[in-house]
Length: 270
Image (tube, rainbow, N blue to C red):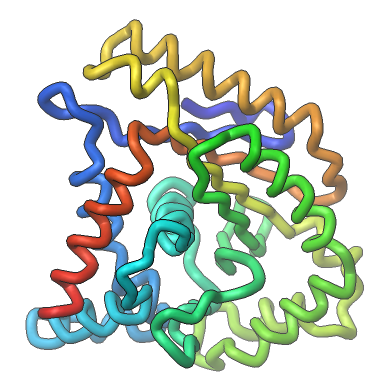
């Protein structure tokens, strides 16, 4: 479901069911298929072909994480956000922070996505936040606390410097994006084209109470999504930038983590 009548906007997405079970395995497979684009700079996507694709997939999988203790890691959430931004909003990444990790199990700080979109009124900069949680209320509370800090001038300037230093000169819209990020450019010029997609996952009572996508399920999950959306909207004090809430109700977070980890390890061994 989607609500774009005002700001913040709402997008709700669910993996659905197959043979009475929430589709954790299919969801994980969908995410794995985005690995090359998620990890590699957009300028290298064209290098993936029948000869190089296997090695690129293996290297991309190794860059996500290599640990048995994956329960508290947030990379899956960042990959979900990446897939949504690419598939639903048609964005392209400005930089991939994972490409610059010095060790596989390092955690990456800063915004969880740095993308751009060629909008109707020109270029837009999309800086994403993710909460890969089980509890929606806690996720909403924590992300709203962070949004204020992350939109402060000092934090943005630090992020812009990092992004600008990692951008490739042969990337799309390089000069225009660099001008936006330049410390000589007033934030008054940046804010009108700045968008903040906020992705929140949570274990859903509506998803858990059904086993097929029918009218009863649709009504239940829509009511649940709208309830969380109203909670977020009523407490969101962000001004001057466009915020987009993306809610992803899960049937079982651990089942998704396990399914993803199994496929990630298989990809690492290619």
